[in-house]
Length: 132
Image (tube, one colour):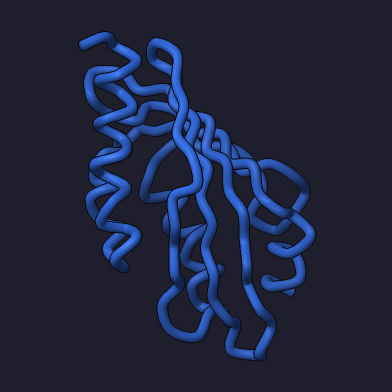
């Protein structure tokens, strides 16, 4: 199996439980010292240098705005060497009734069976409206 195939399989297997509502295995794959970039100029855009910082300052504020769980679905996965590109959607509703139908593309670097880097491409206008 090539490095590309191995990395894609690793990410795909970790993502599958997320489609059933359990994001834990995917985030377990993310290195504690991940370099995670959220694009744009939203309140949570920027570069995070640890998984905990990302959870505290980006995911936490978003999850506080949402009502219940989100539905997440894999759209596509591609890769080349240590790079893996994951496209997926999430659907949910905010506590104020705004639909949060988000499309994501995570451009990732997988090293030593861990996600070491992620650049998250998202609908930043939607994210800004949800966080307002």
